[in-house]
Length: 258
Ligand SMILES: C[S@@+](CC[C@H](N)C(=O)[O-])C[C@H]1O[C@@H](n2cnc3c(N)ncnc32)[C@H](O)[C@@H]1O
Image (cartoon, rainbow, N blue to C red; front, side, top):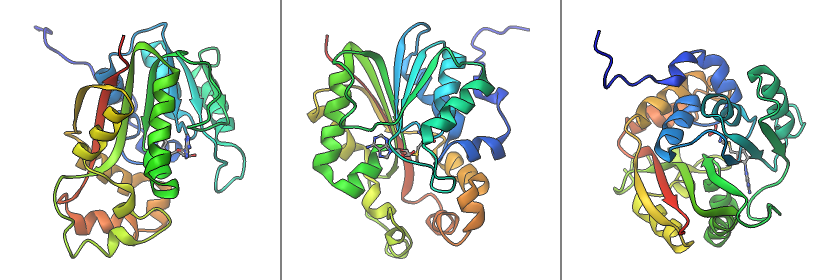
């Protein structure tokens, strides 16, 4: 059989979506982590910072499958169990057999306290939009500037965020995206708005777009995320009403100048 051009998708090894969505938080899970890693061109032996690592499941995946040394930072405690999120990272590291290749630190952007130019890569998915909604656009920009500071020259930043398509919010959807502690209407921005901010923090944009599998990731999240399962009238209902018209998932791959 001719295998030239065959693309092996590492995350297809990991099909236990119930477990993946228990350990990750937000759409995409390991498929998102793999998508970002491929776009960022992760190389073995390099240092990666995962900003907003939550339980560190994606952090461990990146260390295991791409051979990077990965530091996961997350300032929050588990909202159910009350222990620091980075304690879950440590437990997950044992299960993934990457204890010597990952490190969890309970800290957040913009005050990471890492020395400048410490990392070859920074990866952040479904995290910074929370800062924007809770602390405003200035704080979001400060986070981007901190990421720029801790990256080495020539280092790559991969940002993945729930975003909305570049269209007007449909009127019938508005009540659904205006509810909860983190209303999607306030959290989500479009690709043009996000790239402009990333550029203003000093980055050179390599690629920015909506992920082709965004809708599939959102539907998997609606089906498997434990909070979605408990509250079908919240995010799953919003996604049903939306029907893929407005909600998406965007990514920005960018570089710190040499
Ligand atoms: C929705 S989870 C995303 C986890 C994972 N990256 C994913 O995509 O599945 C977002 C995480 O961002 C963290 N977070 C919130 N504010 C942060 C900050 N200022 N710096 C770093 N992480 C932050 C939260 O603690 C939370 O665990």
